[in-house]
Image (cartoon, rainbow over all chains, first blue to last red; front, side):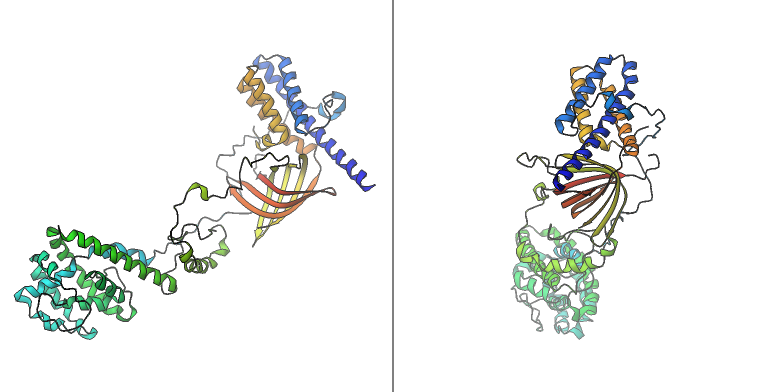
Length: 410
Length: 106
């Protein structure tokens, strides 16, 4: 019984949908008759349009009754509203209205990652290494050696000043010679006798100031790169490191200018060391990131190292706080799994969202609802919306509504 | 004097568009006339909603995608059920396109 009732009801609904559609057809035809006539088009064409239209409607299953265009079946179709005065609506034009749901502007708090500034700076100071050697060759400056040789943190505060002075005097030396003579004795704090192969005293103090990274570089390529961009990595010698680096910077800059003159065969070695320093720096940066908390968390969007590991969500104002923690957590995680990421390409997009052709022709694909929204709200992941004046095409059936309320979860 | 062209994507709108396309391709009517017909269709559709349609619907589902661009909401719902006058329709995936109803001009 209920089945028959339901079917009857469906039929009735479908009939009413057909009625509405046919009413619309009649309305349109009547209204464009004038346009057709003003264009000089025959009425036959208009009738042809109407029959074509209704035929296609029947074919698509939108209306059931092919004879419904009989005027007797549509008593309400006759009155033609002449005073419909809906103003021009340009969907693409600027529109300002009070929205229930405002998409907040993308908020990108820009916190520059401190690690990134280090890298380019490093390479500029490759050459300075052997420069210290030059000091020892210069007989006039050998007296410098014993003083700087201490290498202890307490004493080297004074050394840079005197050393820098010496440095300026020795700037015009030819660095090539000293470079070849280096023996690679690295991180000892011994008192260097003024021998050509002795480890540069200045090197020691720079080593201490910049922490373990400098040890890596020194051991790898007999070179060190003083850090010039601010706070040192090693917390122990922060203040000392900064002071030394500030002073060392100008000296090294001078030295570099001189050095670049005669750098032909050193270039290869320089590049080699550059690469190894690269690797060392990368290691340190990663180590820092994995520790996570001592560094500066990146808050400004996609994580730079892992392209599509982090899901972006910038439309939710209340989600701003949890984002940094999520990002830090994600940073640590994909290190192993995404070592070699292919570059972003169009295949990374989710294909199943707006796919036009879904392979085989399913009969009920693309269920569609076209409507106007009155209100769309969201609370956490619960969405509510009120729609009006809609056409629903579901399961190959058309349903019209004046009002609709929806609740969904994201 | 235009309205939302939203309903041109419905069955009735597509039928009209196809019919007009045929006539224009045949050269029976000019494209300008076809555009005028479509604009009239927009108006008639909107007017029909305010006079002829009475039904109300409610629906639920899982939101797969949401988009709000150019004042148009697009939702993609999964496992949705639409209830109209004790008639329930269930679909596994539906796209909802909604324009703003509050534009003063309308």
